[in-house]
Length: 93
View (cartoon, rainbow, N blue to C red):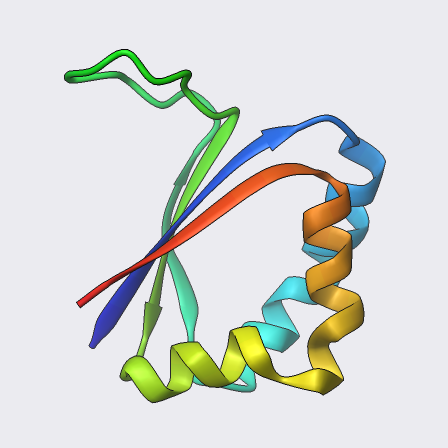
């Protein structure tokens, strides 16, 4: 199992809603699922701006995570996420 942390600062809630409607199927294609999500992250340390939303995703392995983010069939889904605001995704492992 490998994890990805998704941090979003939402500037277009309607686009995020459209992304959310497609995200589950896109993740399932690679055996991934959301493990945890919050719209109220709590800073433990540091001074970087907090995002509006943080999601922890699990993938079976690194290949699955890379397949998900690089799948040309999912370009429209990823484009919705990117158009919803600033987004950082970090793979852990």
